[in-house]
Length: 236
Image 1 (tube, rainbow, N blue to C red):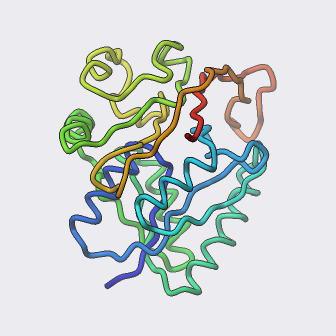
Image 2 (cartoon, one colour):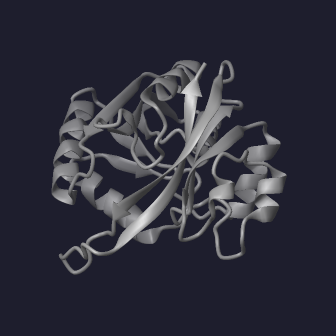
């Protein structure tokens, strides 16, 4: 069986993509790979504490490995660290990388180009699936998740900390993808068919943070920032 690693964020798209991969039973997943902000000791972008990520992996039953990123890495620095991890995975005869991407063509192309350069194939188990169908299936098969981060350009603070359920899906505005594929929100999955047992946590405070805008035309606009709300989850 082909040896693979899974790009694990801890959120719903990762969870349903992992579940579908396990159902097909064509790839042997050796590791869950997650980007960690080592400054805050949390999952990059999602803001989930490392401790909860580790409990997730233990309940899933697949070893966790991480890329330890600085607080705000540049693209060059990120790619160097990614390539170092890929070299490590290749030495273990792992030849396939699994992603939970759905429809972002540029991101898919970027992943395929970078990984093919080192001889790793990409697998996208939920690619081009209808996001409404995906979220319906996610809920129907028993997954449970909480929103841990929202982008204020798309959603207000009230969505942060909410459960992903039918009520949430009805309340998501029409201009927001129900799976948050454009970065509108991020989630933490704490129960479902991939877990041996639910992940226990309590909700902490909701905090607001701003980050620099992405680089455009090789220059960064220092005046432009994007705001995000984060719901801190505390391990029990």
